[in-house]
Length: 253
Image (cartoon, rainbow, N blue to C red; front, side):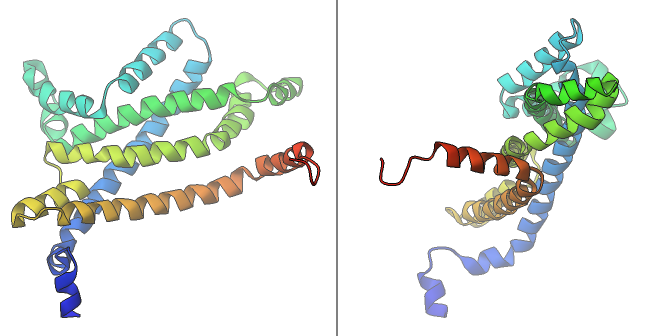
């Protein structure tokens, strides 16, 4: 066993010795990622409704917000908030400075929330726009008000259709959370970089971080695969007859 460990290119005993730090990094990464996703989703629902409503005032405002945060890198947004906010005296003198904007964790959370909120807004807007007209017309025929149509027909249908695309947003947000390590937060990548710098290693810390990210992404994809099977089962039933109808006869290529 000792001979095998000596042959293996990674310093596994050193990784095991410092693995508790990686677990702390996992907690920081998951906390930032999923809390920002939850806050971003709560922000995106009313904004997506406003974006889909074609309101003369709300629609351009929401479009501007989504365009700015989708058109600039997450790293730039985080840096502007963490390094830029402190350059203004009125912000340093405000009540937001000491408990919020002076802390790296809060700056990362705010930047991540605004970023994922912009992407989720456009994702939901597209799902709302794809609502079958027949469902809306049937709801109108039964006398439902606009608010009731949103609650009972449009939004539940849009949420189900958005599941596959939102799984990508969750994974992208997890990958984007590595930005937190650039503002002194010890997330998974931050711990990996610390391990390499502390012991003058080449790649042990980064490979360990990559493996942890892989495990988390695998778990996320399995959860969303289960959600798709549960809530999009009716779409699979529709595809099967359609595929059978277009299938060529036997012996014909």
